[in-house]
Amino acid sequence: MFLGLSNSAKAVLTLVTGPVLGTMSDMHGRRFSWIGAQVGAQLGYIAMVLHVCGYLSIWPFLVLNSLGGLLLPALLAVITDEYAKEKRAAAFGLVIAVFECSLIVGRFFAASLSLQGGVVFLCVSGAIALVLCIMYGETLPPDQRLSLEAANSAPWRPDVALSILLSSSLFRRLSVVVLTSTLVIAGSQQCFIMFLEVAYGVSLVDASSFIVTLALSGLAVQIIALPLLMPRVSITNMLALGLGCQLVQNIILAFVHSEAAVFISCVFGGFGSLVFPCVSALKSCAAPEHEQGRIQGAVTSLQSAAMGMGPMVYGSAFAYLVSPSVPGGHPLPGAIYGLSIVTLIAAFAVTMTLHHHVPEDLKHPTQHAPRRRQSMWRLRRPFSSGGDPMTSEMTSAAWGNGS
Image (cartoon, rainbow, N blue to C red; front, side, top):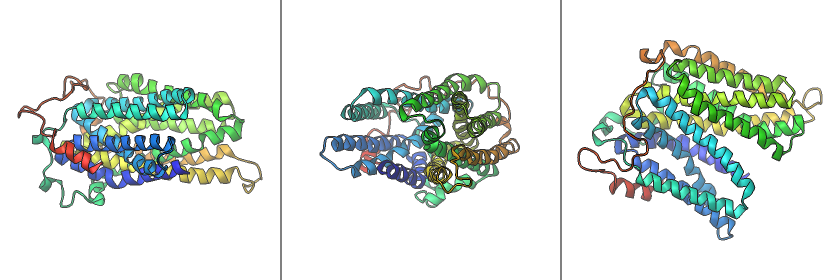
């Protein structure tokens, strides 16, 4: 229950503040939002350690943990500064690959460490991430930042910042794809373990093999398949491929009753992870270069809203489908994936119309292009004007605001 409350709070906070902080990062640089989000997440880890040791209640962790939802939009904005348009989808895919790795490694440590050891490991990992954030140089030079006049009359208002999602027919269609596909992913994750238990009698420990298969499949897709396909397949076709694989995954789970079929569906689910980097890259390439923070914050906030709604919708539907009141009196756990099939068909239909709305240069496979910087991990790059202007003012603002 507590974790559900924390995740709901994270979704709400990201929905409200993500686009605003993205706009502010367009105006003042990326470091203050990136470091601030990491500081908030690290304070949450420390609160968890204190709770496990008996010095603090769980509530400070639940509050501070919600700040972790602001890390992703800040990181995506940094990537748009670092990479040319042609390379952004693959770069976003690498971010997803890191999450897939953490899913695998995290389960290994969770099984081999005690509760106290696990939270200490989490806290140390967060501290290392915070140090790397502080050492990393500012990626948005002052001459490329958005002025207050060019931003809008009220950049601090969430509704104004979110309005970029409705600014064009392409963005409106992509918003529908983000909402529907993320709703399916979040809802399916909520019900997957319960589905295996009801349909196949699989325990939580045995179900981990299916989850690892899904994670490994997604990792292979992001690291190997996506970089190989991007120069050969247009980004809209890549998005359609990802949604098609999600659709096949849910069809298998709904209509094929076999544990082997579940493993196959997990492989297709890994290919479904193509959706998020493709959508993020499409919106990034179509948005003005001086509003990259705003668009990434808006996309992530939309995704967070779906992540919050998905578990509630699917959890309620699944509880009904396995209850005695279901028509026929027999549990129908696989029927929950019928909801996913209908939702994904709608998303796929919208995706088929994107080709008529994307810019001309995105209708064809991307060509190899050099990155904007020599190394993604080069530390503390000075500006040609004589240094990093964010070292004092923005760092102190980030620590003071904690956002």
